[in-house]
Image (spheres, rainbow, N blue to C red):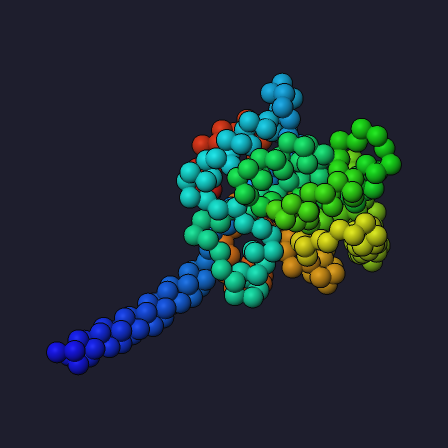
Length: 282
């Protein structure tokens, strides 16, 4: 009788092991199929954060609205992911949660540190900050700047929730050039020199400040320039971010990381509007 009991137990263990192997193959197959079909990735683009509703607008959101977004994302099954996780998924075969969302805070406003970051910590939500080199440099020398200094950017990074991407060194300024757009008076060679010079300045500023940038470039003002993509890729950027409002589809192809769309989270939108866009792309 004892022998029969041991035999039955051994049989059940073999069946369980076989089931586990089959389950792992099934899950791997589903993951491969999902990668081939593509994973939808909405990107939400935030800017300045205020406590005063009277200051809210197209590029200024209240802290209460941001918290409502974070709460709704969690309640509706969305998981904020980091830029590095997105890059690993596409380029290294990494994994993403079922409903990933990327949160980007453009320009590096100081309100990110004082108002947004505490909320991100409370909801354990990673985010990226698009850094303007000139503004971070000025903030370190000017009292009362609206932007984070290099020291404050490093402080944000120490939380483990914040990564940084490039928003250019000097091209995010109000002048005759709109972001990286080529001027009519510039030859292609002149334009290439301007862009390469800015990219090199940004690299130098970040290295001197001890700030690590993810290899991602956010177009200033979302202004696209056909001549910009080749030098950006040649410089080592593995992804580019636009201000075109469409939901992205990630595959295992590196090309899917370029010209990614983002929704500008203006104060005029309701959180429900944001969720609807994430689900439906509108």
